Image (cartoon, rainbow, N blue to C red; front, side, top):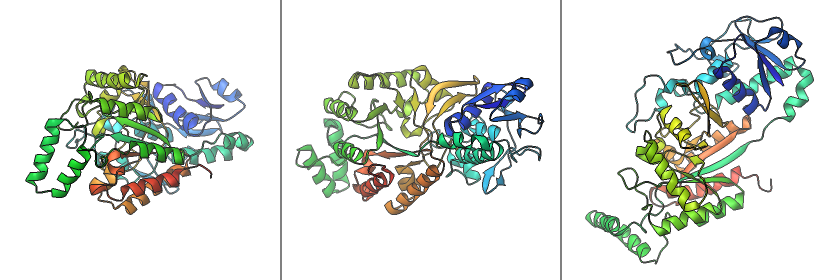
Length: 441
């Protein structure tokens, strides 16, 4: 066990130390405020305070982990051995910056509690973030810091080298798929189907009219109905997968098949027989706990088991309110942590972590799984070709592999269909799965 001495043990301090040591490095960590206990400890140990006790491994502390609430920090990002860092320390410290205060600032999404300009969908924009502005959004910087700190531990405590190395985790990949629109043409109801035909006719889109009619009359398969193919692909490459289903009433932003449609329910039940499923809380659920709860209950009634996983539609969340509402309705895992306009690591880590509510100064039971890249980001925001998009995804995967983390992607059944504007993205997706697969390797 690694023992940490500090003059004061706070919830923030234990939270970030456990993330870096227990979750990233798989090193058990304990805490003490007693100097004699620290000195007597015969094992890995570091002190975290304003002054070292002796010749131990010492990290000079910033005040952030001993404060409550939020305050503005004038942050200056500097270079540490080729890696960006901030909250600089003095020469007596083993590191030139406070890795723990900086890690907490990023992973707690501290900056999202501060005043900021939201985007058109009321989201915190990537462009407002410290990581984007200092060009390290595409790196899981907390994990990188942790592994560099591990090397320092190995130098300081060479007798524990085998134990530390043997606890190294392994790289993992997870594909997550949002089902915003299960079917392009079928199972839409008479009014929406007629509306679609009228729109096609008004635009003289003969090809679309023909395709729509062939699907409606069962001559051709709906282009978005690729669920059997996806399940087959994921089994072929042995890929961990989660499907998130929208269970909302129809709105401007929520236009999936009716939640009362029998075929939609059968589709969900069929998918849930083979892979994990989660709720995709609707556009207007961001601040509406009752709506979240109602939609979660609908999905539970279909699959007949508790739903524990969630991702907000349009990635709309407002911290800490949205996450606290997920806690209140007993959702255990959230997959919303990422940006729509840019790829990368919103919380600067590729390791799942528990949401820390700064308003209440408490670690919650909600486990956050940050994703690194979304199909719509690359195609619709950055205008990437399938080849360029695959290159970006593989580069992000390499960043995660370097720290043996969890690489999560976000796709939609619409994009993987490879139809319309998404032509070629079906081949991109299978290439990605093949690259990420560990089967028979």
